[in-house]
Amino acid sequence: MTAPAPSRSSRPALAAAATLAAALAGCDLEWDKPKLSAPPPARFIEAKPQPQPPISGGRNFAVKFGSKELTGLVERALDDNLDLAAAIARITQADAQARISSAAQWPSVSMTDIARTTRTPGTTINVGSASSGFNPSTTSSSSSSSTSTSSSGFRARNFGFFQLGLTASYEVDFWGKNEDASMAGRILANVSRFDRDVVEISTVAAVLNAYFQVLTAQDRLRIARQNVTIAQQVMDAINARLEVGVATVLDTSQQLTILAQQQATIPPLEQTLRQTRNNLAVLLGQTPESMTIRGGSLTRLSFPRIAPGLPSEVLLRRPDVAEAEARLASQEFSVLQARAAFFPSLTLTSLYGFQSALLSTLLLRPDAIAIQLAGTITQPMFDGWNLQGQYDLQKGRYSELAALYRKQILTALSDTENALIAIRETDRQMKFLSVAVTAARRALEAAEMTLREGTIDIVTLAQTQTSYFQTQEQLAIARLSHFQAATSLYQALGGGWGPTTREIEIARSNAAYEADRGPWP
Image (tube, rainbow, N blue to C red):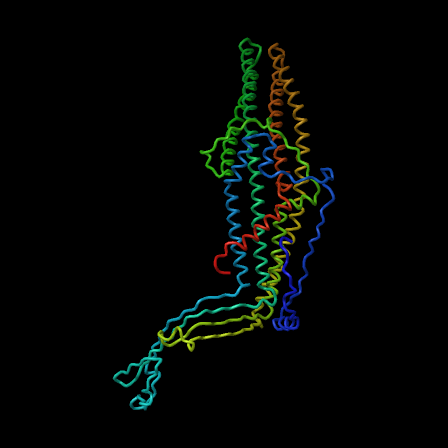
């Protein structure tokens, strides 16, 4: 549980009354609570089964890549990202909602001041003979009202009423309905903080991936320009052979096609580079025009070594799992609140103050003191099955959140396994492609030498060039996937979050609930 459930031992044991109330309301209060048993596996398939300390948080994790620029970008995102700012604002809303949900636990006290004058027509209060409509016996005046007599003999009266006092009302929480509403709201305040942590981890991951994409785009642009240079050199050599009659127009046309194809790869890469920089600026809460990214090469970054630890540890380090669990805990109190609505409700009301028909006698007179005490018991009898519908709705919502909680556990384990697989397989792919690039480079150099000697087949030359160009591009993309897999594992392992962070967030939520209440309880 995200927050401890309140003790029910303090609530009066009114089982007989509860049974009678349920019978009168014609309700079904049975609840088969969904089971949440989802024990984690003993180990990850793709990792050794040994405990590991939590992964580093966003700022410290960025340092592991060995780029000061990347570390600075992550720090700026954590300070200025607008998604994070919105998540923090949602925390304020959730804290306020927790207080609203808890308000019914306290008495409601308000000042009720009244100054009222009522004029009653004489035609409604004077009863006389049928012929005159005037009764002389009603001509006596009262000290608490003023009169005026018209020419017809009817007398109107002005009645005054003045009150200065306090009224209070309080619902006795026999069944814990108000307490359940309070706990549901307070746990949702924890949810908002866990959600902020999820947003923070996602923001760091987005910044890392965007920066990797910038570096990859720069690497691919350098490769494309080098390939254009190579293709141009081969084109020049073929044109020279054409001039002396040892090459054909077909040869030059084929090489021109290769050259133009390589030149055509540059504009999309320029577009990707510029647009990714713009996206990165948004993550940092800045306009694209106000930010400069130097970049460099992805080959110059260090690849961090990350061990996942045990599955049970991962589940405790995932804020999204904690968020799903907290939502479920909050919903359980909502179900209990809906169940308690079937039972009788006792509301106490009181009034204390001064009342008088004349303003001059309102204060400083013991005989003007007014006291009123009342108790009201209400029991739902028939409401068109509204309460039953509300109860079924909350139970259905609980079942939904229970399924989502179990799914979140499976997702967390799957994310970790997938990230480990991606790291391992992209590393193997990079090794194979590195061998392929080296071999393709040697083949191209041999083909160029044969071209200068005048014995090369132009088809073989074209295939050699194309193979070299393609393997370079594939290696750059595989390297990007490798680094993005590290980011995925960072997210899967909770981004530095853990049980200690969880307790800190709950403590902050409780402190926010108790703080800044003002002069009134």
